[in-house]
Image (cartoon, rainbow, N blue to C red; front, side, top):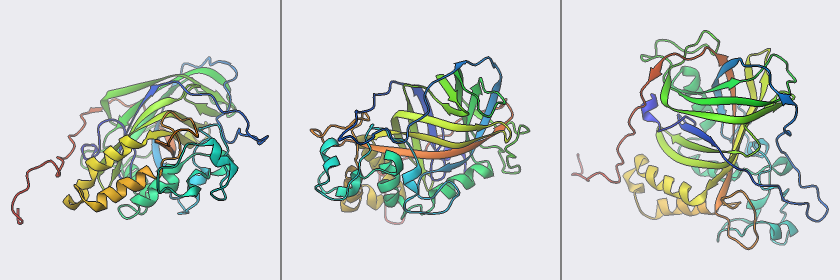
Length: 362
């Protein structure tokens, strides 16, 4: 597998993908409802003085977890409950159609199950892990393992340069910064696998290089900023890229200086349902031209719409129909050498649904 088989920006996926980040603005959490604590799982607060460190450290992702398995790799239908954050500021509990909490969230798309709005642990919002991965299972039953295997082989990675980290495990500082890079194939002929140590010089794609500013770290937990981010993500299912954009995204990880690693990494946010459906339309025909149109692909699109659990801006409004899907992805990374080699991105394969159809044996 090569970078050219994947996508356009930075990689995440069932076999390879892409990711790009630009700083954005986040919304405020909702007030308590009915006296129930609505804080749930949130990132640590921004505290401390500006970092005095100007050292740049580079980390390469060595695993990605999409939510069908826990962070140890054990498949579990409830694993999604522990990935992500309380994005909408509500801790929603649903036991049936008459549950009071349903009056505080957006209206479900027709046909969606009542339990859609049931949050994960501590109010975690992650409908992608809860609902969407079930739709992908026929194509890729173990997406987290597939993508992690591709990374450890050296097919691709995501590299994160961070300026301002120290060797203090409980470091608490502001004014950290970073850059995300696309890591291409570690070795052109697959003759050498990465060691995920500072001996690695992992080639990267020259463009894009995406800056993260306003980051901070609290007791060793790094957060990309108080305003969230926009993450352009393309999940590759069996080599086919599905382009997404995650809004209001939170990127966090636990820095382990002794292990030269990033642990408990999380990317969480909201994808717009209409864009996701459009992405499915673009990729479905690559599995089979029978999916270029017809009842089967329309059924998949309908199921995606029914997975909408939040508004696209990350808020909830009982007067509006849900048009966003909450998502959370886990990762780990190891410190590697500063990259010096530049590679060119590959071209995506042609869309079979838009190509002229020849004779049956062509």
